[in-house]
Amino acid sequence: MLELVDLSKSYGGRTVLARLSHRFAPGEFVAVMGESGVGKSTLLNLIAGLDTPDSGQVVVDGVPMSSLDDDAATQLRRSRMGFIFQAFHVLPHLTLEQNVALPLLLNGGADTSRARAMLDAVGLKGRGADFPRQLSGGELQRVAIARALVHRPALLLADEPTGNLDPETADGILHLLRAEIRQSGAGAIMVTHSIAAAAMADRTLVLTRSGLQLT
Ligand SMILES: Nc1ncnc2c1ncn2[C@@H]1O[C@H](COP(=O)(O)OP(=O)(O)OP(=O)(O)O)[C@@H](O)[C@H]1O
Image (cartoon, protein in one colour):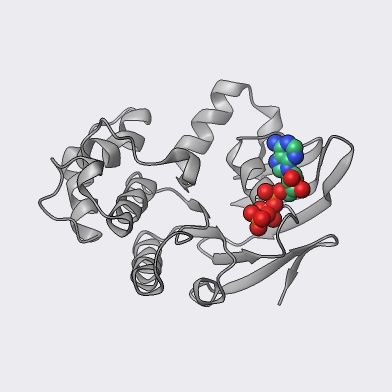
């Protein structure tokens, strides 16, 4: 479903990614680790379309993203991917149900029963009318998981999904995340520094200056 071909990215003359290539198998849950500053978030941002590569290709379903205009690329990502990024945090002025329903709305649907079912699945049954300020950090992260998977994406992208949670809450969130991606058949790429988090994945890749490598 996702292939990276000779992906390169530099910032101000400093090379972060150099001709990185990798093919991700559909439905596979992959953890990406690597030392601070090596380019993990950069890689995820390139896949998510938040940043553009200097050269090389992000290929989704056989289609190079650079061959599409901005609207078509956004549409493809919106329908095929789910995101758990700090930058896309739960929106404070929407209820939990509205937050979770957002990807459905952006994809032209408005299936509120599906949004409610996802809230149930992440243990927030009956909380749909609440606002984010009424939730704990762990509960908010569960809302983010529900929102990332509500539109049944083929691929979930997660940047440190348990970064600011205590170990026990993090463990619960990761079990939930894994159960939900299994249930929906989605693949996932999760950037993390946590060995415990990486252990939940099918396999761990380490990003180094030479590319993505199996541990
Ligand atoms: N928008 C940007 N402008 C300039 N430099 C950037 C930008 N984004 C990232 N960088 C640089 O690229 C390098 C890789 O950053 P990135 O955030 O991808 O690393 P990371 O592996 O995710 O690190 P960490 O584990 O610390 O989060 C860093 O040196 C960072 O300063």
